[in-house]
Length: 190
Image (cartoon, rainbow, N blue to C red):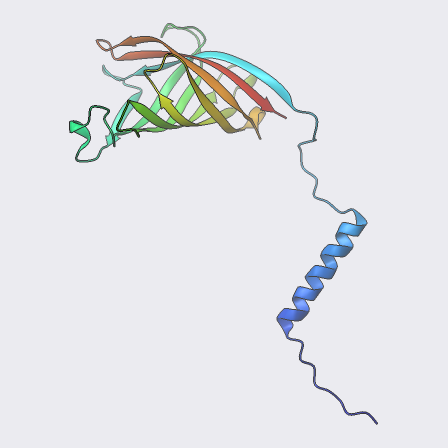
């Protein structure tokens, strides 16, 4: 009779081997996870609206919530952090129909020019996109005539969205504290 050799396979090695074999069997059988997104069904949506920032008066839509101790001495407000809940309107007037809200945070992130690092959700409250949102994040050099901001995601109708927004300031009224920015947005989504 042959001698019995003790097994040197540990539990972790056995589990690892089981995982590898199971993965290979599943791959060979064509098992995959089903999602709601079907490749090749993406569409492009064009949106046009106006971002209204109100920094003065009894009901501002943007507020400075933090700053560095050197921010007040900086010509670009470097280090200032703002929180916003700005109206998005159909037309350039503040009284235009409300389409949504731009909610998020931005900070003065450049020492050379007034440029904001913005992280905003464009939340729609009217029409076909009611309840959906686009997420925009990037650098906004606000005194440039035209700017481009990336759309990095979304929710609801815009789940898995990507694209860009072209921004153009059309009103900057330091007396009333109102800034109006025209947005032309191109979004690719399922």
